[in-house]
Structures are given as C-alpha cells and as structure tokens.
Image (cartoon, rainbow, N blue to C red):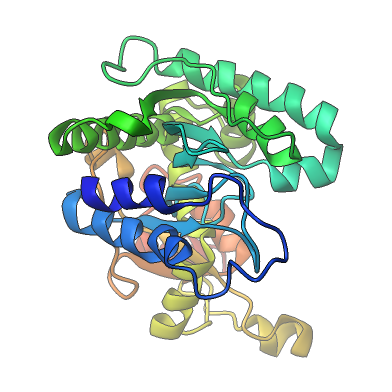
Length: 319
C-alpha cells in the first residue's frame, strides 16, 4: 500500500493544469482511481461492506484528489454522509488520512456559509462520540492549500485525522495501523448515531416503536439503515418477490400500476447479537423478508421483529 501511496503523492501534478490536455490518459490519475484503492483492498483486512474508490477529478485535474473508504450502511458517495478519506494538499506536500464528511449535497442545499457552520457542528458532535477511543488519529486542522469551495468545506468537515509529510511517509505498518484505526472509529460512529443528535434518534425510534432506551434506539436505527439501502432492497425483491409475507397483499393488484413492485425489505437479523464493529454479511433470501409498509411498521413494534409467523397469526386473529 505504501508504494502506491508514494507514487500518488510524487506523480500527482503540483500545479494541476486546466483544459491543457494533461489529464486524459495520465498515469497519475490512474494511480488515484485504481492503484491506491486496489492496494487498500489487498492490504487491509475486514473491509466487508466498505467501498474503496478514488478521484483525480472529473474530466480534468482536481485541486483536492482523494481516496475514500465508504461504509455502504452510511453512504455510497462522497457527496454526502461521512467516511474515511485520504486527502492530498495542493502542491502535494501534505497527505491527510481523516474521517470527514461529504460536502456537495449540503453546499447545494444551503450554500457555502451555512454548509460550513453545519459541518463544524456535525464534526464536533461526532468527535465527542469518539472521545477516549482514538490512539493514532486525533482532532486536527487540515490545510489543503486551495481556494476552491471543496477545500473550504473539506477542512471544517474533518472529525479526526492524521497528517503525513509526503517527503517522508511512514512505514507500511504505520500506514496500515492508521487506516485500520480510522475504520474502527468509523464503524463506532455508525453504531453511535453519526452526527444525529440523541433526541433525534430517540424520536425516530419512538415514532415507529414506542418506548426505547437510547441504546435500543441506536440499534433500531441500524436495522432501518440496512433496510433502506437500495442495493439490499433490489436484491431482496429479486430473491423473494413483491408479495407481502405478512398480509399476502400484492400492492400492484390493489392500487394498480402506480404501486407495481412496491414492497419493503425487512431485516431479520437482530443487530443486538452483533458485537460493536462486527460485520454482518447478509443473504437476501435468508436474512430478509418482504413486507408491505403497514406490516413493516407493525413488525418493528413487536418484541421480536424477526417473527414473521407471529405477524401472520396477529393478522389471522383479526380476520
């Protein structure tokens, strides 16, 4: 991994050109997009559920090249959510490994000034949830050396990180330990609620389920996050069909074409059985059920949300 990162920081243009023809087919762009992500996938264990990708720019050089590790339960894009990311400064003097936030969607909704304030608020909350856990990464102020809006927002988005001088990168083992700790902290943040306030997490769970402790509410949110992932939903529908396993309704038959194929993927594995940071690999056929929105809401109010047979008995008793 170190060799690929070293090639990135030494071959990337110190003064990236714009529309000068230097980007197309450039080796430096390939290193960011392919070589470094491939090396991370090869050298870092337990990447289940993590997407690794990099960018040197969209059809031309960016002043803020990155390689990101994204937990699919949090985000699949660097435009939103939070993730582990390497950021290279303009001039290639400094490389940062950070837990940072996506800025694009927030900037487009709120503008740069409001987005910056919100990123700082979120970063502060997430930092408090990592207190006492970080050994190698720490709260840092990064400087990317660019006046672009991305630079202005990436900098306040950082939760914790570590700075490397590119002229003297750490050894392979230290680089690996740093990214492994970053992933461990990232997974803890996901379980702790990310940047969502505790009262927001509680309200969401109570609205669906009734009374909850905060820990139960956070576990519940994990279930719902998994269920809402588009990739999971599509695979579950392909495996199990679109007829509700509770009330047996086909919403397409009931409402017509507007509801054809409409069904929720319900996660059956109790997350309380998993240790913190433990990775669950899901089988669309065995670990999910398909439920209409009504049955889905009801099953989450049951003591055992995996007991689809009990849900059917409840429905039968009402007929």
